[in-house]
Length: 231
Ligand SMILES: [Zn+2]
Image (cartoon, protein in one colour):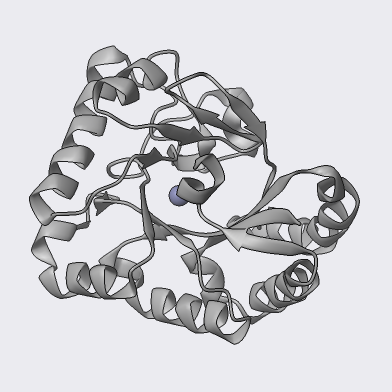
């Protein structure tokens, strides 16, 4: 059976209400394995270390944790404009800045006893230093919009991410096209990723689209995690 990963993006104490809704959503579809993409200090507004109750919640959830940048903020290049909204944290980072951000994220996880070998850069945007630096900090898997890479051996799996845009003027078109894209294109992928931003749980229209897609995919694919995908 083909596979799917259900991943919740931008997990932070700022989105605790939405995270709880997301977990209910997964439960409703009896999806037992999922990935949480955690941002240690979302937009510089909320450090995990300042929110022990939220960290407890994360450990109670007992799902795979993925490091998702450090603060999710950055400047994007012009061509990346379509894919991000000033949140491509690594888009314009030089080597030192990339090291600093990965190190801070990893250190905060270590401090809180959170262990993770998986990394997804915000907006899926990397730079030429990122993969080497992730290896330095003992990360094994990095994932992008279309692929997932095993940093230990260079193996790349084609795995498209389906997502709904957070920007209003693109959102309408997302709502119209994403389900079609999903149905036609993703049929041929070994593993499809459903990348649900927690902010989507503030929008009934988006929740409806996700229900439609998850309902369809559930009968055809088995939900797993990054760890299970790479064994
Ligand atoms: Zn994100």
